[in-house]
Length: 367
Ligand code: NAD
Ligand code: IPM
Ligand code: MN
Image 1 (tube, rainbow, N blue to C red):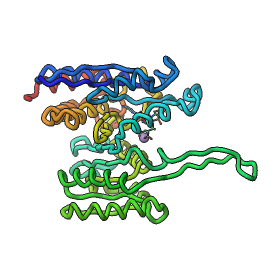
Image 2: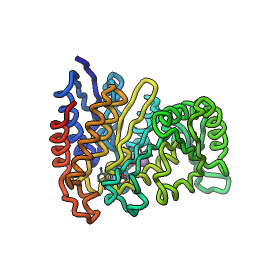
Image 3: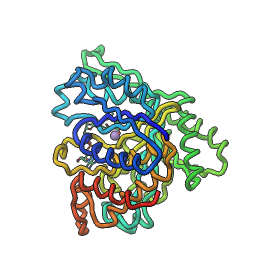
Image 4: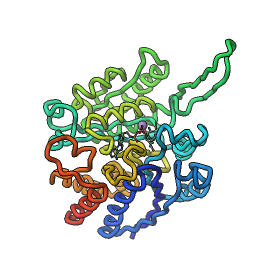
């Protein structure tokens, strides 16, 4: 019997609602397999700040340190609410980035996937979706502008100014490139390298290192794209992409655009992998506009569980079953409010009902 410790950080806003559904799925996985999961809930995010004065309190750090994997819900407050917390203590700077740094989770995998049968969820025309969108963005997660030096002050002319630096070294670029090329080898052997080397020196180094690493993967075809052009291409011809690799900030923005072309950020799970530790979280935020209404789409969180099963516990078969169970719920014509608006006769169900239906589907599937 395998035994895994999972830190469960439900987070803010819709976090607890979608985490609740993800845990139902995890419970069923436990029932169906020779595995036990020790769930270790802990406070993380704005909720932790209000309770403990710290968005990533020591108690939570201790729990995460000893966990085999971390399942994390979205954190953060609405624009107005976040003013209640000092800037440096806000959950993004005070919890999320410190977690990424602490566990050195440099490789963020963000799948953007929509089968042809669900093309009606997307704002794109069916002919653009073609046989379906199935790409994965590989986002560098612990470098770039997010982790550069930051300075704020008054300049010589008496004006307020800020300075934030975009820093990468070749090791940081090489390791994310290896992740991207390895993934490309398992898929279509096609890698889109996203950069801005016509302006940024960081992209010049990025591309140099990419070309060095590419020599180790001669079977992979590399296509270079400037990030701005890639944004358009994602709308006009998303099916050309398979694996896309990019630096931190580009990945933040393009992956939300990925959610846009699918029809909802609720379809965006992710895995954040380091060499020794991994955590799993939806790509989206705490959705303050719909929090507490029971209408959030838990696909992103349940999908993050599927990614955890595969990447942290080697349970590839069950991970595939979880994806299939969710697709099955959609195929039966059900969805949460974010996608049922597509005007295609989709029956709207709640967050909980979606979770229940996934569990029902999964239970009926052979292992
Ligand atoms: P958001 O991603 O929370 O929401 C954007 C839009 O997408 C909203 O209309 C929301 O209702 C919708 N949405 C998101 N997830 C959904 C789901 N599962 N089901 C249905 N609809 C969904 O972005 P925002 O409003 O700009 O940010 C809110 C807060 O979240 C901010 O404080 C931000 O910093 C934080 N944030 C946290 C993370 C994280 O924890 N990794 C990621 C992104 C944003
Ligand atoms: C994400 C989020 C975070 C990011 C924020 C909340 C710090 O937008 O995970 O995409 O920008 O990385
Ligand atoms: Mn983001």
